Image (cartoon, rainbow, N blue to C red; front, side, top):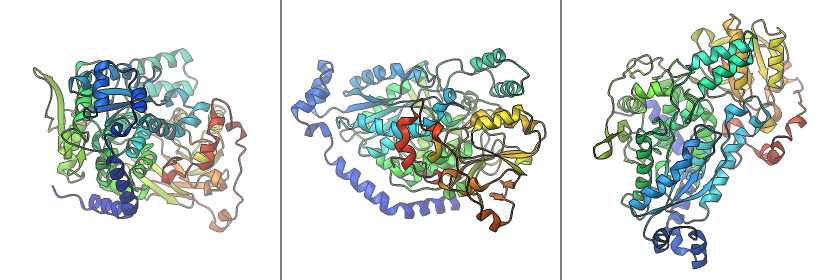
Amino acid sequence: MRLNDTVHRVTERIRVRSRDLRTDYLERMARTAETAPARAHLSCGNLAHAFAASPQADKTRQTGGSAGNIGIVTAYNDMLSAHQPFETFPALIREAAREAGGTAQVAGGVPAMCDGVTQGQPGMELSLFSRDVIALAAGVALSHNCFDAAIFLGVCDKIVPGLVIAAATFGHIPAIFAPAGPMTSGLPNDEKATVRQRFARGEIGRDELMAAEMASYHGPGTCTFYGTANSNQMLMEFMGLHLPGSSFVNPGTPLREALTRAAARRALDITANGHSYTPVSAVLDERAFVNGMVGLFATGGSTNLTLHLIAMSRAAGVLIDWADMAELSTVTPLLARVYPNGLADVNHFHAAGGLGYMIGELLEAGLLHGDVRTVAGDGLARYTLEPVLGDDGLVWRDGPRASLNNKILRPVADPFQRTGGLAMLTGNLGQAIIKTSAVKPEHHVVEAPARVFKVQDEIKAAFRNGELERDVICVLRFQGPQANGMPELHALTPVLGSLQDRGFRVALVTDGRMSGASGKVPAAIHVTPEAAAGGAIARVRDGDMIRLDATSARLDVLCDSREFAGRTPAKADRSANACGIGRELFAAFRSRVGPAESGAAVVV
């Protein structure tokens, strides 16, 4: 199928824009690859330290230099349900590597925090910065320079983007991402949301809320809504860093174990001394990132990826921006309805045909680059296959060519909507991102008086006091990366959703972030320049009329332009955000972080 004109145009624009940076990146990777396998150049003392704890059979292979050695970078911890299954993965990978004639070692661990735990709490102010910490920690793990390939074990929010940044930095070696899979379905997500709104209105007590939450988040695996964690898994498949069909296989199953073992075998096969050398620098080109963006819009994925994709791509020498995303969104149909964009969870989505069906549809429509390199081999068409366990073990077969549930998954010819439901807003308030795939069309335009807040607890208090019982646009500022690390503001969703359900015209305008699970309330997020940098959002006053218009991609204060420009920007005392719960450790990050439109990055 001929590539869509818009997809081609955007890809070429990115390629030209990135030419110098990408050329420099590839030259650096080529120079580094010339010394591979790196341990052949290590001293005897270096090697003795690296393999002192290895079994004797592994030592013989590791010091011989011809057998591939995999470095495992793991984000395992017991507190993240999505990451708890990783406890057993290193043993599986080591065993599979030995069976294939190689070895594997845990190179290092990286931190992994759960935004579900820190929503509305001080710890959320470390969340976005944890992405860059993860990249740094993975860099330390791989700096021992003993590895022919890397397997990355990570799933959630900032973890996968941080690991991709590290993988790109070590782009001279192959990298495979091995996911853990989603937990089995629990309490339906729409029922959970209803309980949260009833609690926010004071209609039920904490016992009922706790019971609903525990029934929703009930076992090992990724949370089943389509938030940032599952958007990450989609992205790794669309960009060719997972084995085909591996994203949404439940943990603790024979198929999940077989896929993990297969990842180890494939990692050895694509090393420089394997059969199909595929360094990650050859996978992560401009076409892969365009494919990832198209996948984000076709699935109605998390707005957090509008930050992470920019940071990830830059690490690979590719420069993308919000305008690229907005333009691709205009030609990408929304093919999935998964909560918060619908009632289904990711298990239902996977059963209906999942990513394999969707990739096939988008390839046939010319909306994806099929001629890419992936960890599975050349060509994205491999990702239309699905893994199964047969009599001879793990095999891939043709995936479904028709949706098994058109309330969850639809073809390109009959999408849920013709566009991907994400837009870049511009106006006299600056630039912002809005996700509309979960917002009903009657809420795509909101014009209402502003009520200005500096912290999210002020919005909750105003709601409890009945001060928001009207049409209102809540402007929550000083939530950007420089101010306090750009926390997610998902804890406001029950409050704002309750007001919207009562018939009020409601929206949020903020320089902070919303969770990947947010959606029903129109929200102009990532407003840049942020208030702490003197952005226009710092000049908004209570009572100003604001118009958020997702149909025309505008975000404006409706007042005299000279008067608005002449206002003195508000200042905020952020001393309370400077310390406590680890925040004092991140002062250097807040002082040097880039703006939202460049990925809110510190290290790239």
